Length: 123
Image (cartoon, rainbow, N blue to C red; front, top):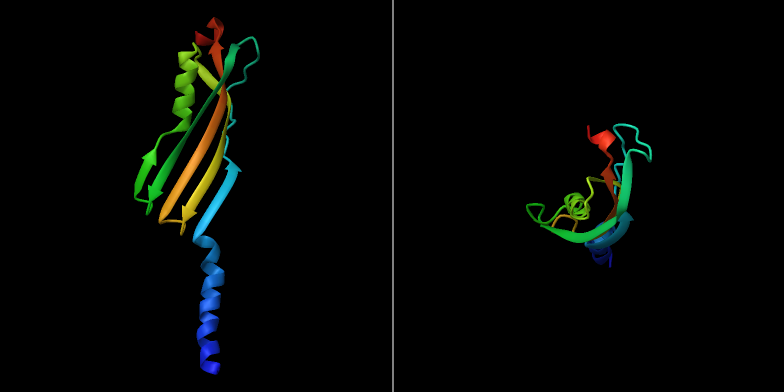
């Protein structure tokens, strides 16, 4: 009986420690860099409207990465609408992983406001 208990204790400890690491699913807001390099007021730009995009990236063993970047997609959409830049961008992330490094999949939604600078700022 003692031999069985001594064999079961390490298995229970390993199962307890690594049980939550096998498969995880997490949803959280992404980091937002709301840093302004200069002060603007509403006379400096015109709001064109909201832009939104979504995508995903996947990594295998932290070596093979596939996916795209959200900031450049938002900026591309803003320029297609006639805007010059984006402000107030936000990212929402949903992450799924297996053993933290074996497989990671992040699905993200991004949104921002497209703006057009007025002539006095462009100079």
